[in-house]
Amino acid sequence: MAAQAYHLDATYLEAYRSSPERKFIGRHAIERLFIGFFAEVLPKDLAVPVDLNFRFVQRIHDGDVSDDRGVYRLRIGNDTFFGQFATRVQNGLFLSDRSSDATLADFERAPGGVLFAADEEELAADFFDRQLGAYVDEGGQGWVITRSARRLFARHITTGDWRGLNRVSGDVWTAGSHVLDTATKTTTFRFSANDDAADLFVERAGEAPRQLRRRRDYRLEPVTFASKAAVLGGHVYVPLNADRPCPAIALTHGSGPQDRHGYASIMGVLADHLARLGMLVLTFDKRGVGASTGDWSRATFDDLATDVAQAVALLRGRADVDPERVGIGGSSQAGWVAAAAVGHARPAFVVLLGAAGAGLTVETQNLYNTRIRLACAGVSEADIALALLQQQAYFQARRDPSHEHALVALTRRAAGRPAIQPELFPGTLGERATAEWFDVLDVDFDPLPIWAAFNGSLFLLFGSHDDSTPTDLVQQRLASLPPDPQRAIVVLAGTNHLGLLCETTCLGEPDRVSRFHPQLFATLTEWANTLLRP
Image (cartoon, rainbow, N blue to C red):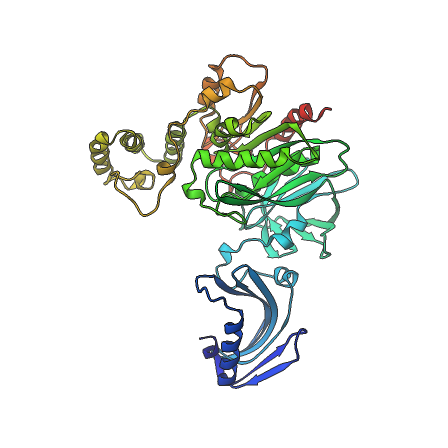
């Protein structure tokens, strides 16, 4: 199939340093080359994924002929190969094709996106992890670079401005006016092209570039650990120049298929801040994501809690960690996971951001989340009420199948209401091909009794405009617990689920917000300092 892309008289030249230069003339000769190549490199197991992708460096068109240069990446299972290409193409067929050596850096530094499935392209850890960390001027002001699976993020140390960056090339990224903004370009971030990205040049529109130097506060140490038949991969953020065993924290995820950096890199943001203060931090890929095996979509709270407990055990076994000062942290769904992990892990402390699971059942949180989404979309109160009744009927039928008839009736009533269709749960209890979260997670799991018996410190941060967590209700439930001097709750006024400033609950999406609450990191620092004292 590959050979059919070549002209009958095409020329193919191999010029790799590892072998003598070879030239093949004609489609049939090229076809024999490809047959031999794939027979050599392809595994016998045809289920192993094969992916070939390209980035163009230059494209010159002259009539129906184009001269193209670029780099390619070939992935076969866990093996990856890189090369450069220079081609001449006429009417969609190669007239000539020259391949030579290239590296990961060559592929990542090439401008533009990949040719195929650009929106799904994940950042290569071996290249982009070297860019993570703080870049500052002589006064200690500057930006902290974190990343998600698919983009870099930049947080200003002083102002709290936070930007998801848009790729120009591996070393050049731009930012707009909000966290996620692809339409405007207000700032350019340019990393030095050396092996450790020691410098960052930040250029705001209309201003000269400002040079910032990399500040070495910690090192990233890759780790793996086993948990319930899964093998989980992650990073330990190890503070530099620690003169005694450190307190340590294992960060766990929000919902969905999150890697060690978390949604919009929020786990990376928290890990960076705590590590720069002097805490040792472990983040890991959720089951079935990144370097971890397993399946997050079928993981129960107990499964996820066991994963966190194993992360805590790993930390306690390190010589550079004080085993009496190891805890759990995270955001969003991490509230339930952390609570479920208390019995397994016996943490000294728990710190959570925007976590409804700190005080509510899953059902209560989901009903609030659904109401807010529909209300912000302008859906009528009558339709919102019907959607919530249908969801409640599903939960009730799951508990007691004799109530399934009520679920069927409400689903029929809702069938003619298009505005609420995306929020409706299945109309029966019949088997489905793919399990959803409401089939897997314990929707009645209540963390309140766990916190009532917890003898460690519990520190909870909430936003007053959280569209996922009913902050007032969580506070009320937590206030019903017996007073405990080790339990602290802080509500950041005018902030969303992640602690970002927003005007209303309906305006907290990443394309509407631009900076963290000024007290978020100051509050985390104050809390962490109580642990960091000898």
